[in-house]
Each structure stands twice: as C-alpha cells, then as structure tokens.
Length: 164
Image (cartoon, rainbow, N blue to C red; front, side, top):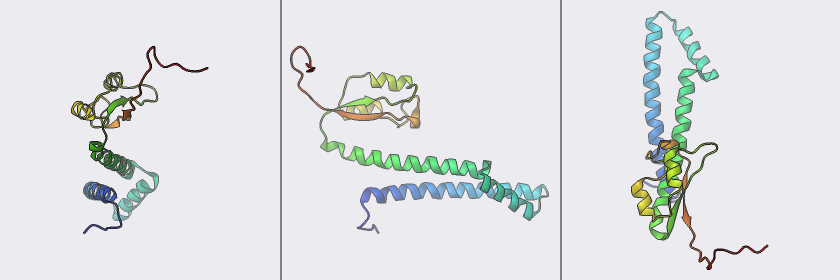
C-alpha cells in the first residue's frame, strides 16, 4: 500500500530503483557463487578465498569495483528516468515549441548536432523523432542534451534593437 506522505513520483522512483538493485544483487550473488566454486575447485582454502574477496572489497578490485560502477550507473539512470517521466507527464499542460539543446564539454555527437541545429517543433514531433538519452542518437543513453521550451517573443521589424 502506498504511503500517503510520500509523493507519487518518489514512490515510483523507489520501486524502479529497488527493482534494479534486486536484479543487480542477484547477479552479483551468482557471480560470487561461481567464483567461490572455481577458487575452491582449484584448491584454495576457505580462509584464502575469504581474504581474497575481502581484499577485493576493500580495494575496489574487479569483482566489487564493477559492482560499484554498475550500482552507481543504475542509480543515476533510475533517478534521471524518473525525473524525465515526471516531466513528460506534465507536458500535456504545456503548449509551445521545443528546441533541442546540445550539451557537450568538448564534442557533440553528429546526431545531437543535427538536432541542435533544427528549428523548434512541438513536443510530440520531437518525441516521434526521439528524445535526448533515449538511445536514438549515437551517444545513446550517455546523451546529456536537453529539451527546452522556446518562449515566444514578438520581434519588431528590422530585428531586435539593443540599446547601448
């Protein structure tokens, strides 16, 4: 039963993240089980196996280091995905034109660059072409571009005059 004190979007995020964590934990358990079986079969004592695993955990070795990276990546994805869904659910209340805003520190992928140079469009049109971070662009889920609403301004004839 949903807790009435927790906002619905946070409850949905919790469900998504806890499911992801459960899957990751199950996968990690299978990986560790297989690893311990191989170590044991190769003649390693229980004490040496335990020390090997504890050292990997302390030092962020391949076994637990990969798990930490996956955990961090899944948490980031879960939070961003929940925020994106919440944002998109509110779009039916927003009328206007949207523009692709290309974000890159050094280089923007060709797909995002093409979209960044497009004229503003209705949200539904962008959605049909693919939104940032949905895997439609070369940069895939690593895309950091955003959609921004274009404020309509009335331009005077001859362009905007800037007072100096």
